[in-house]
Length: 168
Image (cartoon, rainbow, N blue to C red; front, side, top):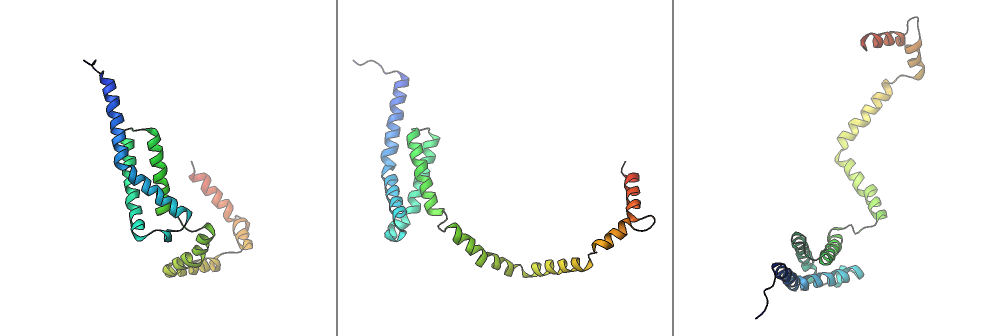
């Protein structure tokens, strides 16, 4: 006759069995995703077949789902770290920028900015017209000095008196 197993030991065995089952069910997908990512990172996406290219987003979502389950059930921290790394690599490959900084800046000045100006030509025209109206209506420095400091009781002294009276 065997001795009864304490409750903690049975729970520990159940967790290990659950972890092993979790890995067994999903590990083939993780390895396939990792292999595809390794191929496209070293070479070009042209090296993948159409079926492999179509499977990349599915395997990515599967890895994210596994990561979510692993985090929610507090599984092995090494497994969580592996799935986080795999998911991050997949994210950067599927959604990351594929152009360099120089090309992005060039595209902005050659295409994006002129396109925005073309789309906003009315607003741009109105703002340029208002700027020229402001330049035309603007006063020179000598004219402003004569207004502020000139005359017997210049504008500046009247303005100062107004501020002192109404700033209490």
